[in-house]
Image (tube, rainbow, N blue to C red; front, top):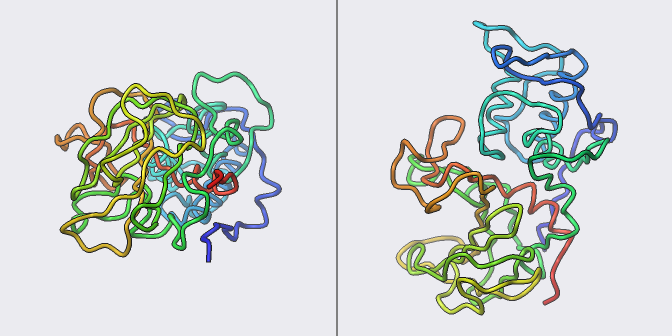
Length: 296
């Protein structure tokens, strides 16, 4: 059976406000924390926690309040946990029309009430231009461990840097959007390979693929184009072969894989992804794209 995700979101979702008037979060960062704005953020975080099965982004209640230092705020903790998964900056602050605000709306399937120009990419506006990387959905979803983003690896010493989509070896992988191949194919993991494609709003790494691809560095790709096939991991036992998909918001530069712990993107508990700091969680994008399947 296909794994189309239809999370049992709270009934409040349809009544969620999709705007805030002032900033919400850390007082020491200058947040205004107006009660109605705080309630909106808390409800969105609650919904995101359930939709993504990510309890760390649950604010543990909706009361419209942010505790002042030195007290610990569960809402601020949830904001920072959300930012560590979905944005390139963790500051415990959500401003109107900011990257974090748009990512939060994106995670719960909401759109801004007022569309205004933003310096940050608004992924929810682009959903019609993006496709799922396969013409059918995998039998296993991408929101539960071990397939999910941020799942434990190496006995908890490393966090999983992408989402795994289980398919048989040789299955065609399709480009999620128009773009340009910036690197690859190159050796990746356990005798598989990877391609890096700049899709405009973000960079995608298509990992654990076969060595022979239909595109190479410098080539243009189009949304839905067959670009590679699922590879086979050698020397490791896994439930299935797969596409390992990573996304980066391009706010950093250099190699995607990082060997220096101090320079790595980290999970909210400090566990490193061993990836560049602009790594973002693909989960909510895949949740949207599952309704946009390419032609086989």
